[in-house]
Amino acid sequence: MLHVWDLSTRLYHWLHAFLFFALLATAYFGLGANNAEQIHTWLGTVLFTLLIWRMGWGIFGSETSRFIQFLPTPKTLWRYLRGRHSVQAGHNPVGALMVIILIVLLGLQGSLGMLISGWVDGKELFGRSGIRTLKQIHESNALLPIILISMHIMAAIITSIKGQGLTRAMISGKINLPAHIQPPKLASNLKALCWLMCSVLTVVALIVFKPFF
Image (cartoon, rainbow, N blue to C red):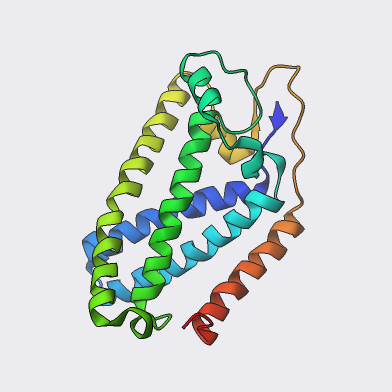
């Protein structure tokens, strides 16, 4: 079995999943709490911080986490859909495309959430009517990640039934691959922690100093 996913990527994956469903619960069901909106804002800020970390990890992180390593081309997607794509460590082309789309969509959601939450003074830039428009976009845009993540869960279930063990691999970090596949280079946990601290400081700076407003 090859070790293909580093610890930080696995922790990010499951924290992302927990925060996403917690955000849905606070947005649509309120969890019976009077301060559901405030909880939603805090959860969204944490997820936004993790997304900044993931974007950085996609550049400086482990080989299987880097965008340049798994960003699919139309040719590789077509070959994969026709069953002619060679096996490799890390994301398959469809999974890679899903990762990119989700990061972009959730990054947009997080950016809109920061603007309308009051963490940054979006009213100074867009005005009250502009903020109302951004809030509407934030609410309607939420449907796309819900659909895509539902598709992702269904794909994970199907692959598990087929015995590919992708969900199990995101827990253990290891997966069965052909003997000729070379093990990927994984970055250290210390490097991941340092970048996480940079991501936290970035969000804190946005909130405290409001550099763009």
